[in-house]
Image 1 (cartoon, one colour):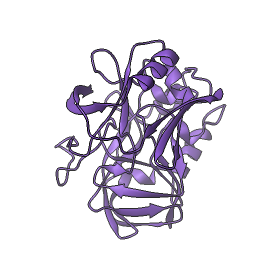
Image 2: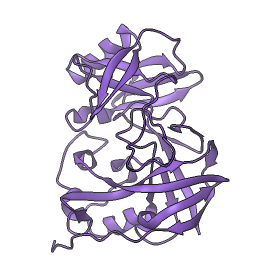
Image 3: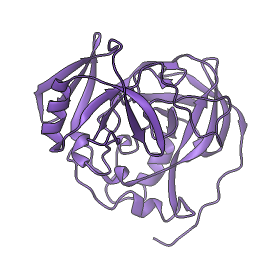
Image 4: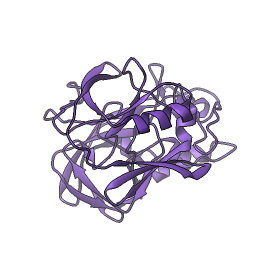
Amino acid sequence: MCTISQLFIYPIKSLGGIEVREANLTDRGLQYDRKWMLVDTGHRFLTQREYPTMSLLQTALEGDRLKIYHKDNIADAIFVPLEPKPGDTVNVTVWDDACSAQPIDTVADAWFSKHLSIPCRLVYMPNSERRMVDKRYAHNQELTNFSDGYPLMMIGQASLDDLNSRLEHPLTMNRFRPNVVFTGGSAFEEDTMEHLVINGIDLFGVKLCARCVITTIDQDKAVKAKEPLKTLATYRKKDNKIYFGQNVLAAQTGFIKVGDEISVISNKPAALFDILSS
């Protein structure tokens, strides 16, 4: 039996996440997940891929506010409202998607610009904006916020355990930024989960998650290395992409929590990967 062991939300795209015991699954992912994003002067999204120091900027939910602080200086913090008042919007880009976003304020912009050493703005996705997932994998015109492309990502703890058994220095799950982590089952069991149910909510595994260099960034030190991509490439690579985790869509809304059972209704064939010598 598979059960949820951890839940994470990442309020600001590419910043530190928050582990929660229970989460509200909305029509575009877990509540507050990737609702905010940093953009450059051209209104293009910023991520740890180009700015690893983003990993040192943490978030926390405090009442009706989102707290943002530096990991090495907790007192250096700013706050923004969880539900900003409606305001003017600007056009921003996330990969190939263009969407509308609401700038927060100049105080937040100055704080982030100082810490990242680049002029940037903090923006928020209003509920009126409807950014859709890739039509090739959508079931019912599902939405997402500022995620790379899908509202949920799931990884089994056994998959990380398998990877760590191959590494000289084990890694923690935060390298992979999942929303849902589960225990039980075998390594990479999430690969074949096609239709699953959690707390009466139907979910569908639609696409394995291709991994990028963010997985090689130490989330405590903002330092890049070769692992885990070097090792994953020996047994989780296909068509020049490395996969770890499954992108998931939900058919309904509701609450999910740590300890919830994951009932697998149907499976799909396991992916065939290129097997290379390490």
